[in-house]
Amino acid sequence: MNIIDDYFIYMSNVSSTISVPSSWEEVIERYRPLPWEDEKGFCAKWMKLWYPPPDYTWPFTRIYCNIDIHEDLTNIFNEIIYQDIVDSIETFDGCYVIRPIRGSTRWSLHSFGIALDFNASTNQLGTDGNMNEALIDIFESFGWVWGGRFRRKDPMHFQRAKGC
Ligand SMILES: [Zn+2]
Image (tube, rainbow, N blue to C red):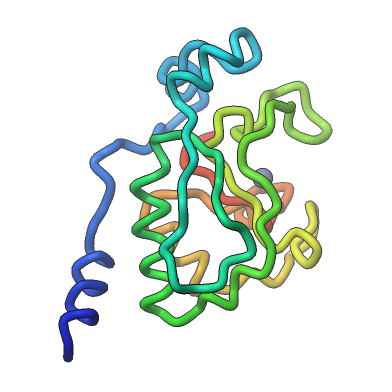
């Protein structure tokens, strides 16, 4: 075992110091000003570019997302590297978009930059999709919710909030 392995084993046991919201109410209480009421104010306070670990080929160069998911993303992507499943991320299909949930009047968690979509072409809404099991396990180990567990399955989707 070399120093690099030790580093990744250490990283894989890190969990975020930022709590995962456990309800919609908690989300809208935390992320003020609300993005659909004051997008400039929301972005100034919460949004920042995140860069994936270098030296690997990712289907994106950076993600504009909520600062609350930066630490998790770094840990999650290091774990993806450690588990040798970099190839499981085929496409990145969006993070921050202010919009309602498709077919609903409720706001999507994408509106807060705390949700990510991957591999959309093979993981469409309402299908089982083909998301890598190990990838799902990694996100869930950090307290994220996978959309493939929703009543209306959304297997491309991962969000850092529970109960909504
Ligand atoms: Zn999504």
